[in-house]
Length: 350
Ligand SMILES: NC(=O)C1=CN([C@@H]2O[C@H](COP(=O)(O)OP(=O)(O)OC[C@H]3O[C@@H](n4cnc5c(N)ncnc54)[C@H](O)[C@@H]3O)[C@@H](O)[C@H]2O)C=CC1
Ligand SMILES: CC(C)CC(=O)C(=O)O
Ligand SMILES: [Mg+2]
Image (tube, rainbow, N blue to C red):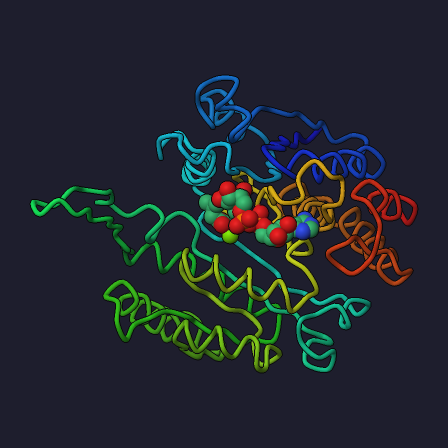
């Protein structure tokens, strides 16, 4: 029996994870679903966003699915104890370095996109975001007071050859099963870590993946091209910061931030960390209106990538498609369904 560890977290996290629980109970009754405190609610109860035993439980499970963490309540908590620090520490501890963020436009939602339907109809981009390196983790970092009394805030963007190579390999391998095309996005024009990124990807491509079409693109141009002509992209491999930003932007091409799931993968055989790409959405938390589909589709990715249940994943994907084809829409998609009502429509199609 496989184990899924659910970490609902804060804000809308518990609301969308409740729908994942219902779907899992109906679709995969043999899956053991455990739950643990995490994020701000763990800080409130235990003084830390990630207990050592929860980290160990995550590493020992077959897959981890989290809702979201953070919110204004914890804005004044010291940086290393903030909910977001718990998330970064969990990603690092699980060494889930390749974050797959599919920006897939369901046919029924082409009209809900921020772009004209013809620009997004058939859109299927796979972001491969490096997740455990770069500026979110680099040292030194901090806020210091300068001799003249003003303050200096600083971070370090750092990547090593092996960190770039291993995520690049994931992107090229994925591309081979798709349209054989990879864009590598960086800022090699102004950043040394970006220059190394470009060199390592170029060498990896020449050495191991000459059959795949590779294009380098500066991250700012990539942002512009995503909203100009997104269908030119298939796989986009990029660093932690650019991947975070570009994938949020791409979410709106698919209709809503509430639609995008993700899978964070490490070494083969190790558990993956699955999460909707959105945050805790404090502006709508507690209202029961959040779109649960990003979380439900994250469960679909967990079934496919970690839990060896491809048939169940196919059934779930078909149920989400049927729900959307039937007109089911939460508020972010222009409809009026509540979180639980959207979950129920998906369930009705399983
Ligand atoms: N993986 C995680 O746990 C993440 C946590 N965060 C944290 O979440 C908190 C809030 O961050 P924000 O910048 O507001 O980003 P956010 O992603 O939480 O929300 C941005 C906007 O999208 C809407 N939205 C997000 N998810 C939605 C859903 N499922 N259905 C309908 N609407 C949805 C929100 O209502 C809001 O208007 C912060 O503390 C941030 O650090 C942010 C991103 C990822
Ligand atoms: C640490 C997270 C809050 C950063 C983020 O927005 C993300 O990973 O999507
Ligand atoms: Mg983000």
